[in-house]
Amino acid sequence: MSHVKREGIELMADEHFDALTQLRDRLVVERRNLVQDLLSDSFADTETRHETIGHFMGLQQFIDTVERALGHEVSLTQNRGPAPGQTQFRPFS
Image 1 (spheres, rainbow, N blue to C red):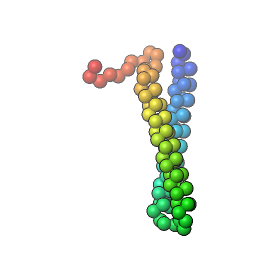
Image 2: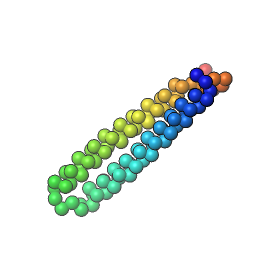
Image 3: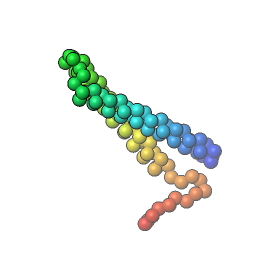
Image 4: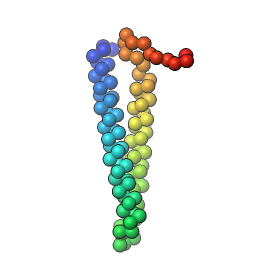
């Protein structure tokens, strides 16, 4: 693989990782806001409260999925190895 192509792939991977991180951060803020709403007893009816709890649970599952995707991205970058012409630092090996 050419050096230029490898740099392009690494740039795309970095952008993808950054986008996932930003998404996760926004979802965590939304989850925090939902928890504050649930704890504030601002819901007059039980149905609205149950809908919000359901939204919270779905949001948490989505956050978990994004976290798994981030972990996958990290594992891919760790398995990529050094660029051509570079040596890989291996402490204590």
